Image 1 (tube, rainbow, N blue to C red):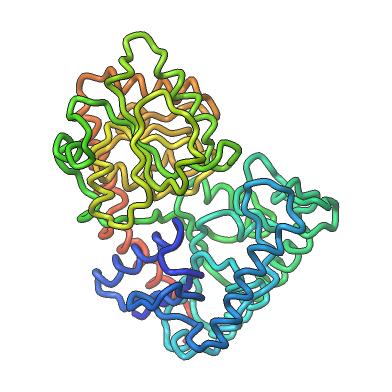
Image 2: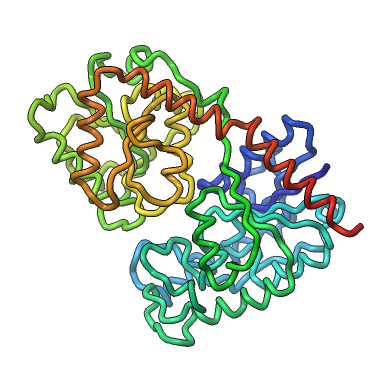
Length: 423
């Protein structure tokens, strides 16, 4: 069985990482699986690309930049991703796609597949699977919806647009997608139950079948290390209670909920019995320390970590991983932390409850409640039997998200599609 995965970039962002992880898992279980990307930032043996010549690369760069910057003329100054999807690349005549048994789509924005070029894939007459890593496929442009319910209808009156109305850009994009989807038969994978429920109430794709299959992770890389030894690597005293968080954007970034995290840390620091000198905050992925807010605890900034084995040791050094994300499908950081036997404290939102089980392998805080996030920190800080929670975190990943489990679920889906597909 030959599977071709399509993604805009190689390994960039959560979708890119999830795509590459699935590809590796499938190859390890007997499939012939490859990833083809729209654009490679550097030559790679891990993926093939549609942009090989200088001319093709120039067109791709133009499309990518146009999609990323033209949108600023239409969207309000909000940190909510929105795609126009005006630009795209026709790929249905590519020989690798013609020779594939299964075409598996992932994240296809930034000038890769517009609705029109997406519909053209029907010419291949192959089973097409599409994993929704965010909400864009069933909205008029946004990738993160928050409380907006316009996607239940036909979009329009978009709260993100400067010129919002019945026939605004979001509604016109919705119409283009409706036309494209009418010509293309594809099978949807939702990585989380939350995403599946969202698709079911969308006007564009609510009638389609949806299969819930989570993303996977390299359990041989993201694994527990002795906590005291891991702390030593980061030059942290073994008795310190370590809280870890991922990329810390600016405080007005809605999507990441940074303001709630900062407020929760301050509240936790003021709780009776919490000794501030015994707590340390570790942040990885931060791009500019100059933009960092003030924290109530000693803070170590790790910067970007490009080595997964070292990242696993960083997770292992932490007593808890905290994310204040307000909307996330199935965040890789949560899965990585649990795989390293580090409990997670997070809001009960998106696909996070599929992984984090309250008071079993972490703490699910009430949505947008900084007090509840602080409660989660205090619960773990005072917990006597931390080892039981840590073991359950690792067990959760091995049971439901390991490469063996997820590869098998995908292969079963592919086989069922090939059995009913006319040859």
